[in-house]
Length: 429
Ligand SMILES: Cc1cc2nc3c(=O)[nH]c(=O)nc-3n(C[C@H](O)[C@H](O)[C@H](O)COP(=O)(O)OP(=O)(O)OC[C@H]3O[C@@H](n4cnc5c(N)ncnc54)[C@H](O)[C@@H]3O)c2cc1C
Image 1 (cartoon, helix red, strand yellow):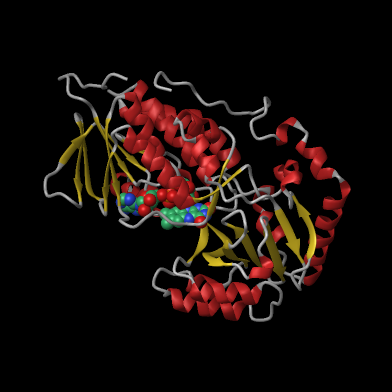
Image 2 (cartoon, rainbow, N blue to C red):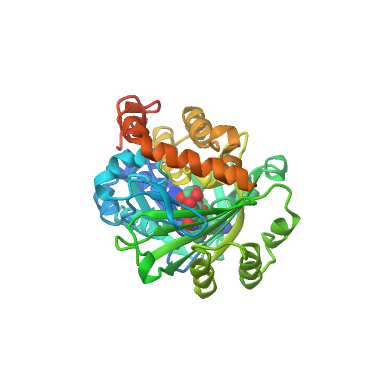
């Protein structure tokens, strides 16, 4: 596309803060549309993280970027899901074998399961191929909006720089949001949940290597979930997930000042009475170097933009891993914020308003925690009785033929004709 220029004929510049899935997707499409795009990415190490899903219209976004085949070639290969009993014996499974892949629609394993770091690298490479410039170890330290544009100070340079607009794609704790939104918007952007999650990668014991994920519950809202990273199940992601309302100890260990060592010791103690996969998981946790623990939060803002500054992805509407839609919303949002800005480059505020108007209904629908927010309480029961009911229900469902029946309904198919939301088409796409 021809460069997008201002009244003086200069190519318009856009700053994207954060080079994760949302930021790199926005940067790709902005550059493709004709903007000069810089990405300020705080981290200077390779992107890491555990498994994430790409679903729905986000598949069309990455197809448009020309990276769908690369993404498909780099998925974890997870075929499905098995629920385990207290001794780690399988109660039932969905899509356990590749031949049962049809059952995926109602299992937690989606068509595209990929490691966050792998996906981010693919998107960054695509953006760089469009001449997007990445500045690693760099963040924004001041933002000054004025009639002609936005003047920004970046941490890797002494001189202020001018941009037409700035896009905050810097995740849940967005610095861009803090610097450019009014104090009232920043006062409480988070919706806290009662769920806490630790995740890390580890090598699986030889006898437990399978191509599907395995989840074992304990009472008091505890679970351990082990998911393959490679097709052989040799390398796995492990998750300690706890749902516990008003738990002061969990709140304390999730506070920013707690060390990883304290958190690992706390989790070992919290799961001490569990059998089955626990031993393997605790060993892996202590050996891990990519351990991460936090309380699960959502981000909910009345508006996703302030003047020439627009937010995208988790910075604006983090739905949390409990919805399973964070990456899908980030990819679609990245495409749409770029599309609206390209359609109206002289008036970023109006462009960002239009992006929110078109996208917020879908975000509300897809970004909510399933079952009216009750999914964590239902799927992580507190009592042994609750656990028995859950296990019996799952056993019954997996033997009933219902999963295959549901998968054949159009609404369960990943790109079926009944989809509620269609991607807007932009001139650059
Ligand atoms: C390190 C990491 C690991 C993750 N692992 C998982 C996971 O295992 N499972 C899961 O479901 N979700 C994970 N997520 C969240 C998941 O990636 C997002 O929910 C989703 O993909 C939305 O992407 P996003 O680009 O909006 O946000 P994010 O993926 O959070 O990306 C934000 C980017 O902004 C950068 N950044 C943050 N602050 C600044 C700043 N001040 N200046 C410049 N750059 C900044 C971050 O380094 C990151 O690259 C992880 C996020 C991160 C940052």
